[in-house]
Figure 1 (cartoon, one colour):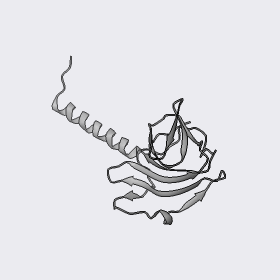
Figure 2 (tube, rainbow, N blue to C red):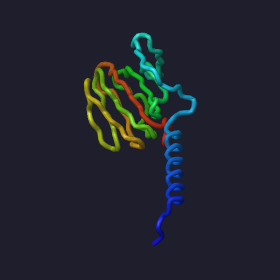
Figure 3 (cartoon, rainbow, N blue to C red):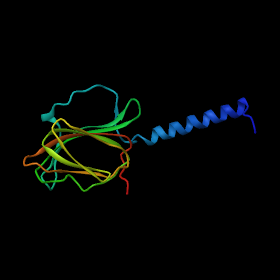
Figure 4 (tube, rainbow, N blue to C red):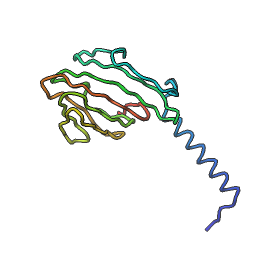
Length: 152
């Protein structure tokens, strides 16, 4: 068995540090703003978009934290009976915070019903989707953390 000398150890540590830096760089979006200052977001002043299905999404923030993670936050008002999009996978993890309404959540083949106050965590690469199964619009926030890339 070979033993590692100081030179080999130094080379190995430098290589590990380099790989770690590459990994951290891969987690951020190169054109994303750096989120280095605290901020308050007035809900009624958030920019909003309306989808073909009537869903209204308000973008809160998108950028890279000082610690290197990419984060994106938005709020959606989803009409009764609608889905925001078909089930999908992506590399980031996300939290879904239910503000109002009743949603059916699909996660990795499992179906659950969630209500106001519930929180859903979806890990990276897990097939997931949701649908408003209530009689009124559902409102929820999405907090996505990590590399923003769809998985095919």
